[in-house]
Length: 69
Image (cartoon, rainbow, N blue to C red; front, side, top):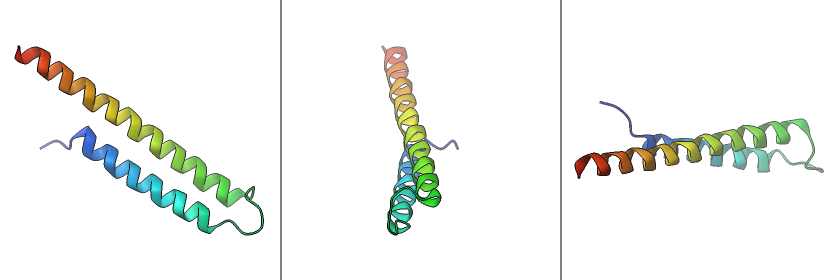
């Protein structure tokens, strides 16, 4: 059984949110320390993948709807 792209997008969004939380916790005096930047960059990548997976899910559903008619 395959895992839905929508479920994968949800998982990637949750992981991205966790990375944002860790980035927020790593802020000491200034925001521009390397750990904060790294965690924020990883979170941005996670959210980017989630958006692409949601787009893929929509395209698959549209294709299935067209083939049904």
